[in-house]
Amino acid sequence: MAESVKDAEAVEGAGAELTSAEAMLEMILLKEDEIKRRVQRAENEAQRLVEEAKLDAAHKKREAIREDIGQDLREKELARAHAEAEKVAREMSAQAESIRKKGMEHVDDAIRVVIEGVLPPLE
Image (cartoon, rainbow, N blue to C red; front, side, top):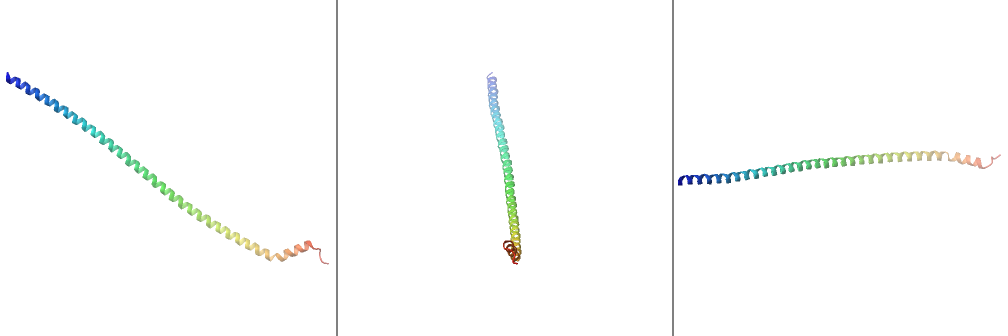
């Protein structure tokens, strides 16, 4: 009978150890699941940040290109406007010179017409 008591105590002790080991294994599995969830969340957040950075970089690149293109177009239009203004100024100067020359050619005729219109004819 002493032997059976010892056997019973050994089985009971082994059961207690088994229960303790099972509880510890369960805690380890729960902790492992928690760590996996944390790692997954961290990976998801990192991926989101990478995608956000890529989008931001693409947006900034488009803006820079747009500003460069806008600046180039502005400079081209200003150069074209300056060239057109210079051309118009040259044409106006040439027309003014032409009119002045024609006016100088007709000054004698103009003076004669004015004198004839103001003074009575000499008879």
